[in-house]
Image (cartoon, rainbow, N blue to C red; front, side):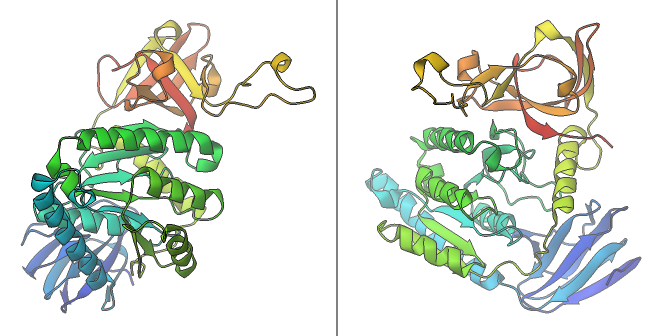
Length: 428
């Protein structure tokens, strides 16, 4: 049911308007009267907001609203059944825990109750995990908290580009168009879009990120009380399930929200029943969620990378820079045998070390690769260091020994060590 031109939609209480913007042109939308929100963030009255092509979102109203739209949509329809009531009830419980933690932290900062809620959102792909995460963060920010958002989903990347895990404090409700502000995110570069590429490295980086977040919490009672909201991958079988348990453990999660999966919920309840402070709560999956096939996922990854360099609405102008091979040191993590054959039992094959940092020769293989710039001062600090940003290799000249790359800003790179994974981008 796609529409075009200027039209109004009247929403009854507790209903939502689900929208998918068309592929070619942005959509303008405003709130004419009543109150409404997008993923937990209130819409300003009577101000036109512009949503870029292909964006999927929902406008929800608690008490009724009239919405005006200008432009074409791929689909738009009204739904009167949403799980938002159960979501806001979860928010109310979390809010009470934050208040309790804040009160207790002044009396007894070391008691477990002085820790605010550490919420982890789990479930299969396309169950609305990042939507629920955004709602919980925005509602908390609206109440004056500054919860920390942790994104462990390397496939899509809600905070930065795909292939990374990241954390950032959320100080204001999340902008429905711009998304999460990138002032000071803490980003670790995994370099692949599936954990299968290097499960050990994924675990190590999750651990690094959690230690860094804990360090930022130390001595900051306000952040501790506000707590965490952790978004996870949709891979919940086999090794994916093990990685979920690892994340719950590593971040000391005390609230596990399971979206739309009975089996996963009972498995987690069973395995976590010995942890007295952990609540496992099953929730309905978000209503407007659409299944996205592999092709769609690849496309949206590509858009996320493009957005990093060019901005959401093409408002950034990235810089093309040329460096000599000698100016840059590029490394790959994982690969290379661990021990020499002479040190192994007879007949044993040397195993590759998944967390070994290996220097890479600069050649044409790096074309179209996205590289991360590490804050490391020495190569052996690369795994334990977060990254400053990304560059995209546009040309390699073997004769001249030069590498041409795109960076979001002009000037020197913030570090001389770059990391390459399997993340590529074909600039269209």
